[in-house]
Image 1 (cartoon, helix red, strand yellow):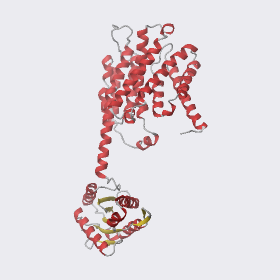
Image 2 (spheres, rainbow, N blue to C red):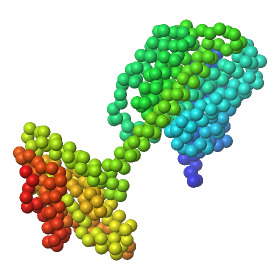
Image 3 (cartoon, rainbow, N blue to C red):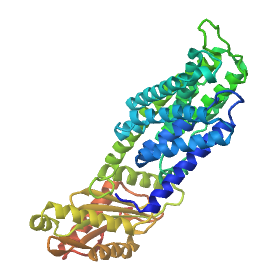
Image 4 (tube, helix red, strand yellow):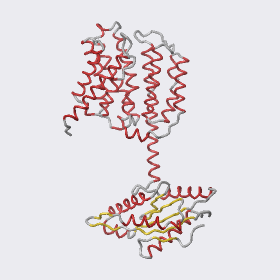
Amino acid sequence: MVFPAHSRLLPALLLFGLTFALTLGGILARPIESLSLFWPVNAVLAGVLLRHPRHGSFVGIALMYLAMVGADLLCGSQWYPALWFNLCNVGAVITFWRLLVNLPRQHRRLRTPHGVLRTFAACAAGAMVAATLACLMATPWFDQSLRSTWMAWFSEQFSTSVLVLPIMLTAPSLPALLRSSGQRISLSPLLMLLASLALSIGFGGPGAIAFPISALLWCALSYSPFLLSLLTLTAGSTLIVAVAQNLMHFSMPQSQAGVTALMSARLGIAMLVLGPLIVACISHANRALLARLAHQANVDHLTGALTRSAFTRQANALLEGRRQHSQRLPLTLMMLDIDHFKAINDRHGHAVGDQVLRECAQVLQAQLHDGELLARLGGEEFAIVVPGLLPEQASFTAERLRRAVQELQVRGGEEQLRVTVSIGISGCSDQRPASSLDNLLADADQALYRAKAQGRNRVEQAQRQVI
């Protein structure tokens, strides 16, 4: 696709501005004369490249690098360290991006355990690249040994990317986020996580960083991967800050030269979130599979109407609720049959017949209101239940449905098909107990038979109302 000049310039400016703002924020939050405690820039930018591949070009990466260097110089850094250390950051971004960009979408969006493991491996590789590049010039700029410098860069880059990158990869689109905003979520796992974090800080010690694991696993079973990623970021960053500020009295023997308590805590916290993320993606996949199976069991794949089994279950629930109601409400049941449907199949083929079924179901559904049921019982036969409508007063509604189908225009090859339906009506009057759904269907079926026998494209009432 060829983009106009202005449409290429705006994304480039946005990418430059985002990189500049993130880098400036990371520098300003950094302790004086120290490496950043939390540097999310690289993981965020890698996520941007993975979500918007057209930025993954030489120009896009060069803009990121220039924005990083510009922010560093603005904060008073010298030219040489600004150029070199931001080259370390860009190296990490490129590594994250190149190791994940060719993964299938379901893996890249962390919808499979394989995707989670590949993301962790990419985070480790990117952190190694950044740490190795930093060590190449550690002598003039760091007082620490090469081992200490490498471990400091690696632990920070790995822990931060593990906490931030999953958010970028699992984030839903804005329309999907708005659709899910009204859904209710359980607060118990979240409260459990907050309590476990408070207990970790209050109890202290090296083992305290593992306290939130049970709460995170509960969150993984209860929430989406995106929401869990936000919670792991919250938990991980809280623990890292607590260790850095010595709030948890986290100490370890210095038997390994250059390994500090903060480095160890960062790596432990990063590995802590691996299990919950895998559980979350498996749980999300299982919920999606169950939702698809439920949809297939309840919704006819061709017409979008209810299946016979789903209709039977929901109609019986309406009848049962009517029996238990102190004031028995009326209920109308209609059976509809597409006239001469076999002739349509024989003359125009089953593809046209399927189109007739689909469009008839769409027209009927458009005429119904919330709480009214439309089902495909089989073949060309449909059923409709209208709660609150007296069967003897249902002729107007049935005529409206019949006319809506009659006005439908379906193209069969070179000609326009005329589609009509015959309708039989049965139901339950108010203040009377209802019989079974089978009796209602039988009465409506007899009325439908009379409608077809009397010329089709008409509505007939059942001769005996079920009471």
